[in-house]
Length: 486
Image (cartoon, rainbow, N blue to C red; front, top):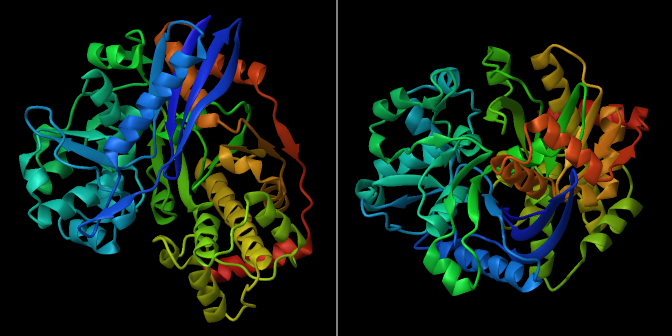
């Protein structure tokens, strides 16, 4: 039996999950969970790295206290694009900046030197104002002291791994999210790096999921009271790990559902056509070294922010209460585009959604149920739009949608998705990113041969749910409304 520990960090919370692999089956147990929200210092949105590192130590301590023996391996996955900078001596120069501070001006500044069609041709990544390339060029334009002093750039999961092990490398799946990876050269996009005057020396060697990277530092192992466990490169981008753990087969689309809804398909090669660029889809990496043409759809962030608005007003609702209120509300009353630019930044989400409905001549959601139903149905409708674009991109029909991640706990949204796309929806596993993380560790240890064997273990280990579609004329009318809004 192998004892594995996955650190799965999202932009709203993180988990330490124990995985035990035995006899071709993986069992999982959550050992530690914590909140994660960005902080604002000196007007800059940042991730509190000392806090995150302390939470990882607590996860190790929880494993120690579980009394299951030595830890064989651990791995870390997080969201994409965000990074930290180390000086030439390997010391952290400051907290990593958080992607929520991005603005469209950051993209436009880059495009004056390297236009978007050229960027897409080189990287296959969508124009998203928070992409690492835009974040870095903003710092260069500002004359940022930390960037000028930087000796190494590490994306967030690699940065946390470095602080725990001393090994500084960059894992492929997260590197592809930066808009600074050239899939043809299979290296950093050095042409763009040079054109923008970014410091080329800060970009490290790229490795792949399923490789060992070293061990937990001796001083940390002694501090925690744990053996020096091996550290593995996993699909460090949480979506890559989640997609690896999809139990599906045949022609399917995937959706990793959480704060974001990452909606796509798997391919062996990037698809760099004008149609893909025009639809603003990205070609992000898979743990097997291929690609995921996908769309970043604003996900449950919308209702998470509404809930924070209600809490600030003294009204606290559990998620089950919110879903129940949505279920009781009138269907398909109001539709929004979940990816409208106004919804990207936090705070005042209720007011923003109401303003969108008012401007587009629709009934304004007032109650908790009306607001939640508007969000859930609009997400389901945007899923249909993304699925149709993917069928055009891939050139073949998609038979079903597989949804993984924490969002599948919302069974109302799962059914809405099936009704909207008029195809079966398969959900599970809920901890998809953690499961993919754990099984990539097993690959690094030589216990699993490839992603096909990985998915067989997922099918042996996880029950899934199937939602059959009930597509109606009302859903069709609502979809046409969404198309006019787009």
